[in-house]
Length: 124
View 1 (tube, rainbow, N blue to C red):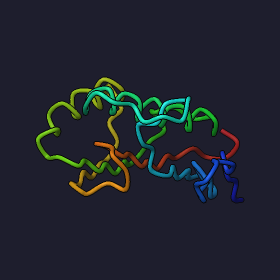
View 2: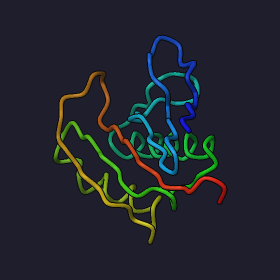
View 3: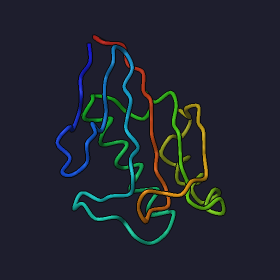
C-alpha cells in the first residue's frame, strides 16, 4: 500500500509524506509558516517552525514525533549546531530518533531543513 499526503503544494512537485507499508517518509521540511512565507530571525525560530511543520505532516498521517525512527538535518552553518540541538531536543524529549546532520548550501535563504522517517504498523 502506498499513500501520499499533501500532494497539492503550489509550485512544488512533491508529496509532503508518503506511506509505503508500515513506513512513512517525510519530505524535507523547511521553516515556511502557514502563510507560505519563510520565517526570519535565525536558527532558533527557523528550527521551531521546521519542527512544527514536521509535527503537522506527521499528524496528517496519524503519527507523532514518537513514531519517528530517523531524521536527516541540513544546516547551512555549523556554528548553529548547538542552538539547533537545543530546540530539536525540546521537541523529541526522550524519544530521540537516529539522526544524521549535514552542513549544506540550501536551495533557498533558510538555515535548516529536516527530513524524517517514521514507523507505524498499518492497523495499529
